[in-house]
Image (cartoon, rainbow, N blue to C red; front, side):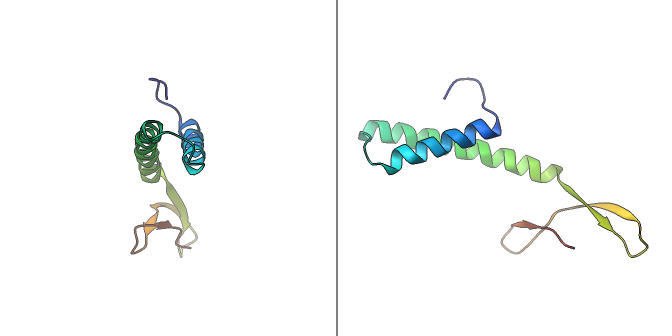
Length: 85
């Protein structure tokens, strides 16, 4: 991975590449460990991006009076966001 921060899609694509390489079991231990470390870093980067995006997301809800208002995503017991329509 270069020193420039990738965007979300680039990071996700790279994580998929790493997964494919590691699943073929052809890498040396040293290479596998380097890929694992890079994968963990990418996972943390992607998770942070998703967390920030979740904070920015709001739903447009129609009230009983027929008006619209913005509300944040609600979360279920597992912490997963869901739409409450």
